[in-house]
Image (tube, rainbow, N blue to C red):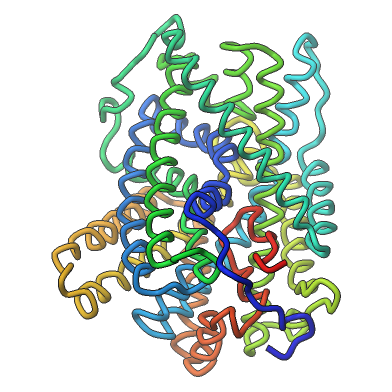
Length: 501
Protein backbone atom coordinates (compact mmCIF):
# COMPACT_ATOMS: atom_id res chain seq x y z
CA UNK A 1 0.00 0.00 0.00
CA UNK A 2 1.25 3.42 -0.84
CA UNK A 3 -0.30 5.35 2.04
CA UNK A 4 2.03 6.70 4.65
CA UNK A 5 2.68 4.41 7.50
CA UNK A 6 1.40 1.30 5.77
CA UNK A 7 4.73 -0.34 4.99
CA UNK A 8 5.24 -2.18 8.26
CA UNK A 9 5.19 -5.91 7.82
CA UNK A 10 4.27 -8.70 10.13
CA UNK A 11 7.15 -10.08 12.11
CA UNK A 12 8.28 -13.57 13.02
CA UNK A 13 5.84 -16.18 14.20
CA UNK A 14 5.94 -15.88 17.98
CA UNK A 15 2.35 -16.45 19.06
CA UNK A 16 1.96 -19.90 20.62
CA UNK A 17 -1.19 -21.98 21.05
CA UNK A 18 -2.25 -20.58 24.41
CA UNK A 19 -1.47 -17.05 23.24
CA UNK A 20 -3.92 -17.55 20.39
CA UNK A 21 -6.52 -18.97 22.82
CA UNK A 22 -6.07 -15.96 25.12
CA UNK A 23 -6.46 -13.65 22.13
CA UNK A 24 -9.86 -15.06 21.21
CA UNK A 25 -11.04 -15.03 24.84
CA UNK A 26 -10.00 -11.41 25.20
CA UNK A 27 -11.70 -10.35 21.98
CA UNK A 28 -15.00 -11.91 23.06
CA UNK A 29 -15.04 -9.70 26.14
CA UNK A 30 -16.68 -12.18 28.55
CA UNK A 31 -17.12 -9.70 31.41
CA UNK A 32 -19.13 -7.33 29.23
CA UNK A 33 -21.16 -10.21 27.76
CA UNK A 34 -22.07 -11.75 31.09
CA UNK A 35 -22.77 -8.42 32.79
CA UNK A 36 -25.21 -7.09 30.21
CA UNK A 37 -26.58 -9.77 27.88
CA UNK A 38 -28.72 -11.64 30.39
CA UNK A 39 -31.07 -8.78 31.28
CA UNK A 40 -32.57 -8.38 27.83
CA UNK A 41 -32.83 -12.15 27.48
CA UNK A 42 -34.58 -12.84 30.79
CA UNK A 43 -37.26 -10.28 29.94
CA UNK A 44 -38.12 -12.42 26.89
CA UNK A 45 -37.65 -16.04 28.02
CA UNK A 46 -37.88 -15.80 31.80
CA UNK A 47 -35.84 -18.42 33.64
CA UNK A 48 -34.79 -20.20 30.42
CA UNK A 49 -31.76 -17.94 29.92
CA UNK A 50 -29.29 -20.85 30.37
CA UNK A 51 -31.17 -22.82 27.68
CA UNK A 52 -30.82 -19.89 25.27
CA UNK A 53 -27.07 -19.87 25.85
CA UNK A 54 -26.92 -23.64 25.41
CA UNK A 55 -28.49 -23.21 21.95
CA UNK A 56 -26.08 -20.37 21.31
CA UNK A 57 -23.12 -22.58 22.25
CA UNK A 58 -24.29 -25.25 19.81
CA UNK A 59 -24.56 -22.65 17.06
CA UNK A 60 -21.11 -21.22 17.77
CA UNK A 61 -19.65 -24.74 17.81
CA UNK A 62 -21.09 -25.33 14.33
CA UNK A 63 -19.69 -22.01 13.10
CA UNK A 64 -16.40 -22.74 14.82
CA UNK A 65 -16.15 -26.00 12.89
CA UNK A 66 -16.22 -23.95 9.69
CA UNK A 67 -13.43 -21.67 10.86
CA UNK A 68 -11.41 -24.67 11.97
CA UNK A 69 -11.66 -26.43 8.62
CA UNK A 70 -10.90 -23.28 6.62
CA UNK A 71 -7.96 -22.19 8.78
CA UNK A 72 -6.47 -25.66 8.34
CA UNK A 73 -6.31 -24.75 4.65
CA UNK A 74 -5.70 -20.99 4.78
CA UNK A 75 -3.34 -19.33 7.29
CA UNK A 76 -4.61 -15.96 6.15
CA UNK A 77 -4.57 -13.01 8.53
CA UNK A 78 -8.15 -12.00 7.92
CA UNK A 79 -11.63 -12.32 9.36
CA UNK A 80 -14.62 -14.19 7.99
CA UNK A 81 -14.76 -11.88 4.97
CA UNK A 82 -11.33 -13.01 3.82
CA UNK A 83 -12.19 -16.68 4.19
CA UNK A 84 -15.52 -16.18 2.39
CA UNK A 85 -13.73 -14.41 -0.45
CA UNK A 86 -11.20 -17.22 -0.74
CA UNK A 87 -13.86 -19.95 -0.86
CA UNK A 88 -16.96 -18.53 -2.54
CA UNK A 89 -15.65 -15.56 -4.47
CA UNK A 90 -14.83 -11.86 -4.31
CA UNK A 91 -18.37 -10.55 -4.34
CA UNK A 92 -19.45 -12.87 -1.55
CA UNK A 93 -16.35 -11.72 0.31
CA UNK A 94 -17.41 -8.11 -0.21
CA UNK A 95 -20.88 -8.75 1.25
CA UNK A 96 -19.33 -10.54 4.23
CA UNK A 97 -16.84 -7.70 4.67
CA UNK A 98 -19.59 -5.11 4.51
CA UNK A 99 -21.52 -7.07 7.15
CA UNK A 100 -18.47 -7.20 9.42
CA UNK A 101 -17.81 -3.47 8.99
CA UNK A 102 -21.34 -2.41 9.96
CA UNK A 103 -21.28 -4.94 12.80
CA UNK A 104 -18.35 -3.16 14.41
CA UNK A 105 -19.97 0.22 13.87
CA UNK A 106 -23.03 -1.00 15.78
CA UNK A 107 -20.81 -2.53 18.47
CA UNK A 108 -19.03 0.82 18.85
CA UNK A 109 -22.44 2.47 19.25
CA UNK A 110 -23.92 -0.03 21.71
CA UNK A 111 -20.91 -0.30 24.00
CA UNK A 112 -21.29 3.33 25.05
CA UNK A 113 -24.60 2.35 26.62
CA UNK A 114 -22.93 -0.56 28.40
CA UNK A 115 -20.15 1.70 29.74
CA UNK A 116 -22.76 4.07 31.14
CA UNK A 117 -24.90 1.36 32.73
CA UNK A 118 -21.91 -0.44 34.26
CA UNK A 119 -20.40 2.82 35.51
CA UNK A 120 -23.53 3.69 37.46
CA UNK A 121 -23.71 0.13 38.77
CA UNK A 122 -20.13 0.55 40.01
CA UNK A 123 -20.95 3.88 41.69
CA UNK A 124 -24.00 2.35 43.34
CA UNK A 125 -21.91 -0.57 44.61
CA UNK A 126 -19.26 1.79 45.93
CA UNK A 127 -21.87 3.72 47.92
CA UNK A 128 -24.12 0.81 48.77
CA UNK A 129 -25.10 2.23 52.15
CA UNK A 130 -26.80 5.24 50.58
CA UNK A 131 -30.40 5.37 49.39
CA UNK A 132 -29.31 7.87 46.73
CA UNK A 133 -25.92 6.74 45.38
CA UNK A 134 -24.05 8.89 42.83
CA UNK A 135 -25.52 8.68 39.34
CA UNK A 136 -24.05 10.02 36.11
CA UNK A 137 -26.55 10.76 33.31
CA UNK A 138 -25.98 7.93 30.88
CA UNK A 139 -25.56 10.14 27.82
CA UNK A 140 -22.92 12.24 29.58
CA UNK A 141 -20.99 9.11 30.60
CA UNK A 142 -21.26 7.79 27.04
CA UNK A 143 -19.89 11.00 25.52
CA UNK A 144 -16.97 11.14 27.95
CA UNK A 145 -16.11 7.49 27.23
CA UNK A 146 -16.24 8.17 23.47
CA UNK A 147 -13.86 11.13 23.76
CA UNK A 148 -11.38 9.15 25.87
CA UNK A 149 -11.51 6.23 23.43
CA UNK A 150 -10.95 8.61 20.51
CA UNK A 151 -7.85 9.97 22.25
CA UNK A 152 -6.40 6.46 22.60
CA UNK A 153 -7.48 5.38 19.13
CA UNK A 154 -5.50 8.16 17.47
CA UNK A 155 -2.31 7.15 19.23
CA UNK A 156 -0.13 4.10 19.78
CA UNK A 157 -1.93 2.35 22.65
CA UNK A 158 -0.25 -1.06 22.79
CA UNK A 159 0.56 -0.64 26.49
CA UNK A 160 -3.02 0.43 27.28
CA UNK A 161 -4.30 -2.59 25.33
CA UNK A 162 -2.24 -4.99 27.43
CA UNK A 163 -3.60 -3.42 30.60
CA UNK A 164 -7.18 -3.72 29.36
CA UNK A 165 -6.61 -7.38 28.53
CA UNK A 166 -5.23 -8.02 32.03
CA UNK A 167 -8.35 -6.50 33.60
CA UNK A 168 -10.52 -8.68 31.34
CA UNK A 169 -8.65 -11.69 32.71
CA UNK A 170 -9.46 -10.50 36.23
CA UNK A 171 -13.12 -10.28 35.27
CA UNK A 172 -13.12 -13.86 33.97
CA UNK A 173 -11.54 -15.06 37.22
CA UNK A 174 -14.13 -13.19 39.28
CA UNK A 175 -17.03 -14.61 37.26
CA UNK A 176 -15.70 -18.11 37.74
CA UNK A 177 -15.39 -17.64 41.50
CA UNK A 178 -18.86 -16.09 41.74
CA UNK A 179 -20.42 -18.95 39.77
CA UNK A 180 -18.85 -21.55 42.05
CA UNK A 181 -19.97 -19.70 45.20
CA UNK A 182 -23.58 -19.26 44.01
CA UNK A 183 -23.92 -22.95 43.11
CA UNK A 184 -22.16 -24.03 46.32
CA UNK A 185 -24.61 -21.94 48.39
CA UNK A 186 -27.57 -23.43 46.56
CA UNK A 187 -28.72 -20.29 44.75
CA UNK A 188 -31.50 -18.02 45.99
CA UNK A 189 -33.29 -19.22 49.15
CA UNK A 190 -36.66 -18.86 47.47
CA UNK A 191 -36.08 -21.28 44.58
CA UNK A 192 -32.67 -22.95 45.08
CA UNK A 193 -30.88 -24.75 42.26
CA UNK A 194 -33.49 -25.00 39.53
CA UNK A 195 -32.47 -27.29 36.66
CA UNK A 196 -35.71 -26.51 34.82
CA UNK A 197 -33.88 -23.45 33.51
CA UNK A 198 -32.63 -25.80 30.79
CA UNK A 199 -36.15 -26.82 29.76
CA UNK A 200 -38.63 -25.29 27.32
CA UNK A 201 -41.30 -25.20 30.02
CA UNK A 202 -43.13 -21.90 29.83
CA UNK A 203 -41.63 -20.97 26.47
CA UNK A 204 -42.19 -21.91 22.85
CA UNK A 205 -39.35 -23.02 20.59
CA UNK A 206 -39.83 -19.85 18.54
CA UNK A 207 -39.39 -17.67 21.63
CA UNK A 208 -36.15 -19.41 22.54
CA UNK A 209 -34.80 -19.14 18.99
CA UNK A 210 -35.75 -15.49 18.85
CA UNK A 211 -33.64 -14.85 21.95
CA UNK A 212 -30.60 -16.81 20.74
CA UNK A 213 -29.32 -13.67 19.02
CA UNK A 214 -28.28 -12.41 22.47
CA UNK A 215 -26.21 -15.53 22.95
CA UNK A 216 -24.53 -15.10 19.56
CA UNK A 217 -23.76 -11.53 20.59
CA UNK A 218 -21.87 -12.86 23.61
CA UNK A 219 -19.53 -14.90 21.40
CA UNK A 220 -18.96 -12.15 18.82
CA UNK A 221 -15.31 -12.16 17.80
CA UNK A 222 -14.48 -15.65 19.07
CA UNK A 223 -12.67 -16.26 15.78
CA UNK A 224 -10.27 -13.37 16.44
CA UNK A 225 -7.17 -15.56 16.62
CA UNK A 226 -7.78 -16.59 13.00
CA UNK A 227 -6.77 -13.05 12.05
CA UNK A 228 -3.22 -13.72 13.28
CA UNK A 229 -2.47 -16.65 11.01
CA UNK A 230 0.69 -14.88 9.84
CA UNK A 231 2.02 -14.50 13.39
CA UNK A 232 1.12 -17.82 14.97
CA UNK A 233 3.59 -20.66 15.22
CA UNK A 234 2.48 -23.54 12.96
CA UNK A 235 -0.82 -21.71 12.12
CA UNK A 236 -2.55 -24.52 10.22
CA UNK A 237 -2.27 -26.63 13.38
CA UNK A 238 -2.42 -24.10 16.22
CA UNK A 239 -5.11 -21.73 14.92
CA UNK A 240 -7.69 -24.55 14.59
CA UNK A 241 -6.70 -25.86 18.02
CA UNK A 242 -6.97 -22.38 19.51
CA UNK A 243 -10.43 -21.95 17.99
CA UNK A 244 -11.49 -25.30 19.45
CA UNK A 245 -10.31 -24.36 22.93
CA UNK A 246 -11.78 -20.86 22.71
CA UNK A 247 -15.22 -22.21 21.76
CA UNK A 248 -15.11 -24.95 24.39
CA UNK A 249 -13.96 -22.68 27.23
CA UNK A 250 -16.40 -19.86 26.48
CA UNK A 251 -19.27 -22.33 26.03
CA UNK A 252 -18.72 -23.79 29.50
CA UNK A 253 -18.12 -20.36 31.03
CA UNK A 254 -21.17 -18.65 29.50
CA UNK A 255 -23.64 -21.45 30.15
CA UNK A 256 -22.54 -21.88 33.76
CA UNK A 257 -22.38 -18.14 34.50
CA UNK A 258 -25.87 -17.60 33.09
CA UNK A 259 -27.15 -20.59 35.06
CA UNK A 260 -25.57 -19.21 38.23
CA UNK A 261 -27.03 -15.75 37.63
CA UNK A 262 -30.52 -17.12 36.99
CA UNK A 263 -30.63 -19.29 40.11
CA UNK A 264 -28.72 -16.63 42.05
CA UNK A 265 -31.52 -14.12 41.62
CA UNK A 266 -34.18 -16.81 41.86
CA UNK A 267 -36.42 -18.33 39.21
CA UNK A 268 -39.67 -16.97 40.63
CA UNK A 269 -41.28 -13.79 39.27
CA UNK A 270 -39.62 -11.50 41.81
CA UNK A 271 -36.16 -12.91 41.19
CA UNK A 272 -36.46 -12.74 37.41
CA UNK A 273 -37.70 -9.14 37.60
CA UNK A 274 -34.69 -8.22 39.72
CA UNK A 275 -32.37 -9.94 37.23
CA UNK A 276 -33.95 -8.16 34.26
CA UNK A 277 -33.64 -4.68 35.80
CA UNK A 278 -29.98 -4.74 36.88
CA UNK A 279 -27.53 -2.24 35.39
CA UNK A 280 -24.81 -4.86 35.87
CA UNK A 281 -26.21 -8.27 36.74
CA UNK A 282 -22.95 -9.55 38.24
CA UNK A 283 -22.43 -6.66 40.66
CA UNK A 284 -25.53 -7.32 42.77
CA UNK A 285 -24.81 -11.04 42.93
CA UNK A 286 -21.20 -10.36 43.89
CA UNK A 287 -22.31 -8.28 46.86
CA UNK A 288 -25.06 -10.71 47.89
CA UNK A 289 -23.02 -13.90 47.77
CA UNK A 290 -19.48 -12.72 48.57
CA UNK A 291 -19.29 -9.07 49.66
CA UNK A 292 -19.12 -5.42 48.65
CA UNK A 293 -15.40 -5.54 47.90
CA UNK A 294 -15.93 -8.37 45.41
CA UNK A 295 -18.81 -6.58 43.71
CA UNK A 296 -16.59 -3.53 43.24
CA UNK A 297 -13.85 -5.58 41.59
CA UNK A 298 -16.15 -7.33 39.15
CA UNK A 299 -18.10 -4.13 38.49
CA UNK A 300 -14.91 -2.23 37.66
CA UNK A 301 -13.81 -5.03 35.33
CA UNK A 302 -17.15 -4.80 33.51
CA UNK A 303 -16.77 -1.05 32.98
CA UNK A 304 -13.31 -1.53 31.53
CA UNK A 305 -14.47 -4.46 29.38
CA UNK A 306 -17.26 -2.34 27.86
CA UNK A 307 -14.87 0.56 27.29
CA UNK A 308 -12.33 -1.74 25.65
CA UNK A 309 -15.00 -3.14 23.35
CA UNK A 310 -16.03 0.36 22.25
CA UNK A 311 -12.44 1.44 21.78
CA UNK A 312 -11.54 -1.58 19.66
CA UNK A 313 -14.82 -1.61 17.72
CA UNK A 314 -14.18 1.98 16.65
CA UNK A 315 -10.65 1.05 15.61
CA UNK A 316 -11.73 -2.04 13.71
CA UNK A 317 -14.63 -0.40 11.87
CA UNK A 318 -12.39 2.56 11.10
CA UNK A 319 -9.82 0.29 9.49
CA UNK A 320 -12.48 -1.43 7.42
CA UNK A 321 -13.86 1.93 6.32
CA UNK A 322 -10.29 2.82 5.36
CA UNK A 323 -10.11 -0.21 3.05
CA UNK A 324 -13.53 0.49 1.54
CA UNK A 325 -12.78 4.16 0.85
CA UNK A 326 -9.24 3.46 -0.38
CA UNK A 327 -10.73 1.27 -3.09
CA UNK A 328 -13.41 3.79 -4.07
CA UNK A 329 -16.37 3.15 -1.75
CA UNK A 330 -16.81 6.01 0.68
CA UNK A 331 -15.41 9.53 1.13
CA UNK A 332 -11.77 9.90 0.11
CA UNK A 333 -11.03 11.49 3.48
CA UNK A 334 -11.50 8.07 5.12
CA UNK A 335 -8.62 6.67 3.08
CA UNK A 336 -6.02 8.97 4.66
CA UNK A 337 -3.68 7.62 7.32
CA UNK A 338 -1.97 9.52 10.08
CA UNK A 339 1.73 9.37 9.09
CA UNK A 340 2.92 9.03 12.72
CA UNK A 341 0.74 6.16 13.97
CA UNK A 342 -0.63 4.73 10.68
CA UNK A 343 -4.17 5.27 11.95
CA UNK A 344 -7.15 6.09 9.67
CA UNK A 345 -8.03 9.05 11.88
CA UNK A 346 -10.82 10.47 9.71
CA UNK A 347 -12.63 7.14 9.58
CA UNK A 348 -12.14 6.63 13.32
CA UNK A 349 -13.48 10.12 14.03
CA UNK A 350 -16.49 9.39 11.81
CA UNK A 351 -17.41 6.24 13.76
CA UNK A 352 -16.90 8.10 17.04
CA UNK A 353 -19.08 10.97 15.81
CA UNK A 354 -21.87 8.58 14.79
CA UNK A 355 -21.68 6.87 18.19
CA UNK A 356 -21.89 10.17 20.05
CA UNK A 357 -24.71 11.51 17.87
CA UNK A 358 -26.86 8.41 18.36
CA UNK A 359 -26.25 8.52 22.11
CA UNK A 360 -27.47 12.12 22.20
CA UNK A 361 -30.52 11.26 20.07
CA UNK A 362 -31.24 8.27 22.30
CA UNK A 363 -31.07 10.45 25.40
CA UNK A 364 -33.43 13.05 23.91
CA UNK A 365 -35.98 10.68 22.37
CA UNK A 366 -35.81 8.02 25.11
CA UNK A 367 -35.51 5.47 22.28
CA UNK A 368 -34.98 2.56 22.14
CA UNK A 369 -36.94 0.82 24.88
CA UNK A 370 -36.18 -2.88 25.27
CA UNK A 371 -37.64 -3.51 28.69
CA UNK A 372 -34.70 -3.71 31.09
CA UNK A 373 -35.81 -0.57 32.94
CA UNK A 374 -32.35 0.96 32.42
CA UNK A 375 -32.22 3.43 29.51
CA UNK A 376 -28.49 2.86 28.96
CA UNK A 377 -28.87 -0.92 28.96
CA UNK A 378 -31.86 -0.69 26.59
CA UNK A 379 -29.67 1.36 24.25
CA UNK A 380 -26.90 -1.22 24.49
CA UNK A 381 -29.13 -4.21 23.87
CA UNK A 382 -30.97 -2.66 20.89
CA UNK A 383 -27.87 -1.69 18.90
CA UNK A 384 -26.00 -4.81 20.02
CA UNK A 385 -28.84 -6.93 18.61
CA UNK A 386 -28.54 -5.16 15.24
CA UNK A 387 -24.79 -5.79 15.25
CA UNK A 388 -25.20 -9.40 16.29
CA UNK A 389 -27.59 -10.05 13.41
CA UNK A 390 -25.28 -8.48 10.81
CA UNK A 391 -22.41 -10.54 12.22
CA UNK A 392 -24.55 -13.68 12.05
CA UNK A 393 -25.06 -12.94 8.36
CA UNK A 394 -21.27 -12.92 7.91
CA UNK A 395 -21.11 -16.21 9.82
CA UNK A 396 -23.83 -17.59 7.55
CA UNK A 397 -21.65 -16.72 4.56
CA UNK A 398 -18.81 -18.53 6.33
CA UNK A 399 -20.92 -21.65 6.62
CA UNK A 400 -21.69 -21.52 2.90
CA UNK A 401 -17.97 -21.16 2.21
CA UNK A 402 -17.28 -24.16 4.42
CA UNK A 403 -19.86 -26.24 2.55
CA UNK A 404 -18.18 -25.44 -0.75
CA UNK A 405 -14.73 -26.09 0.69
CA UNK A 406 -15.67 -29.52 2.04
CA UNK A 407 -17.36 -30.61 -1.18
CA UNK A 408 -14.65 -29.37 -3.56
CA UNK A 409 -11.31 -29.28 -1.72
CA UNK A 410 -11.70 -31.65 1.25
CA UNK A 411 -13.67 -34.48 -0.28
CA UNK A 412 -12.21 -36.91 2.25
CA UNK A 413 -14.19 -35.00 4.89
CA UNK A 414 -17.30 -34.45 2.78
CA UNK A 415 -19.45 -36.22 5.39
CA UNK A 416 -18.80 -33.28 7.71
CA UNK A 417 -20.81 -31.06 5.40
CA UNK A 418 -23.82 -31.81 7.60
CA UNK A 419 -22.30 -29.55 10.30
CA UNK A 420 -22.12 -26.29 8.30
CA UNK A 421 -25.55 -27.13 6.84
CA UNK A 422 -26.93 -27.40 10.38
CA UNK A 423 -25.16 -24.16 11.31
CA UNK A 424 -26.66 -22.36 8.32
CA UNK A 425 -30.13 -23.71 9.11
CA UNK A 426 -29.82 -22.63 12.75
CA UNK A 427 -28.91 -19.07 11.79
CA UNK A 428 -31.73 -18.88 9.25
CA UNK A 429 -34.14 -20.04 11.96
CA UNK A 430 -32.84 -17.36 14.32
CA UNK A 431 -33.35 -14.74 11.61
CA UNK A 432 -36.85 -16.02 10.93
CA UNK A 433 -38.00 -16.15 14.54
CA UNK A 434 -36.56 -12.69 15.21
CA UNK A 435 -38.50 -11.21 12.31
CA UNK A 436 -41.86 -13.02 12.48
CA UNK A 437 -43.07 -11.38 15.67
CA UNK A 438 -41.91 -7.84 14.86
CA UNK A 439 -44.44 -5.15 13.96
CA UNK A 440 -42.40 -1.93 14.13
CA UNK A 441 -40.23 -0.94 11.18
CA UNK A 442 -37.58 0.23 13.65
CA UNK A 443 -37.22 -3.22 15.24
CA UNK A 444 -33.59 -4.29 15.45
CA UNK A 445 -33.90 -7.20 12.94
CA UNK A 446 -35.44 -4.93 10.30
CA UNK A 447 -32.71 -2.31 10.72
CA UNK A 448 -30.08 -5.05 10.38
CA UNK A 449 -31.59 -6.35 7.14
CA UNK A 450 -31.98 -2.83 5.75
CA UNK A 451 -28.29 -2.16 6.34
CA UNK A 452 -27.29 -5.49 4.80
CA UNK A 453 -29.52 -4.63 1.84
CA UNK A 454 -27.26 -1.67 1.09
CA UNK A 455 -24.29 -4.02 0.73
CA UNK A 456 -26.29 -6.32 -1.52
CA UNK A 457 -27.34 -3.41 -3.76
CA UNK A 458 -23.73 -2.29 -4.12
CA UNK A 459 -22.75 -5.82 -5.12
CA UNK A 460 -25.54 -6.05 -7.70
CA UNK A 461 -25.21 -2.62 -9.27
CA UNK A 462 -21.49 -1.89 -8.76
CA UNK A 463 -19.91 -5.34 -9.20
CA UNK A 464 -16.54 -3.99 -10.32
CA UNK A 465 -16.25 -1.82 -7.25
CA UNK A 466 -17.32 -4.70 -5.02
CA UNK A 467 -14.61 -6.89 -6.56
CA UNK A 468 -11.96 -4.22 -5.99
CA UNK A 469 -12.93 -3.72 -2.35
CA UNK A 470 -13.05 -7.48 -1.79
CA UNK A 471 -9.52 -7.80 -3.17
CA UNK A 472 -8.38 -5.18 -0.65
CA UNK A 473 -10.11 -6.95 2.20
CA UNK A 474 -8.43 -10.24 1.31
CA UNK A 475 -4.96 -8.81 0.66
CA UNK A 476 -2.06 -10.57 2.34
CA UNK A 477 -0.92 -8.50 5.34
CA UNK A 478 2.69 -9.38 4.59
CA UNK A 479 2.18 -7.15 1.57
CA UNK A 480 -0.51 -4.88 2.99
CA UNK A 481 1.22 -3.90 6.21
CA UNK A 482 -0.03 -3.18 9.69
CA UNK A 483 -3.42 -1.81 8.80
CA UNK A 484 -4.31 -5.05 7.04
CA UNK A 485 -3.28 -6.94 10.15
CA UNK A 486 -5.40 -4.74 12.36
CA UNK A 487 -8.68 -5.72 10.69
CA UNK A 488 -9.60 -7.78 13.71
CA UNK A 489 -12.82 -8.58 15.51
CA UNK A 490 -13.83 -6.31 18.40
CA UNK A 491 -11.48 -6.51 21.36
CA UNK A 492 -8.49 -4.72 22.74
CA UNK A 493 -6.16 -6.99 20.77
CA UNK A 494 -6.97 -5.01 17.64
CA UNK A 495 -4.32 -2.64 19.01
CA UNK A 496 -1.62 -5.13 19.93
CA UNK A 497 1.66 -4.51 18.09
CA UNK A 498 2.99 -6.94 15.54
CA UNK A 499 5.30 -9.55 16.99
CA UNK A 500 8.24 -7.84 15.39
CA UNK A 501 7.75 -4.64 17.37
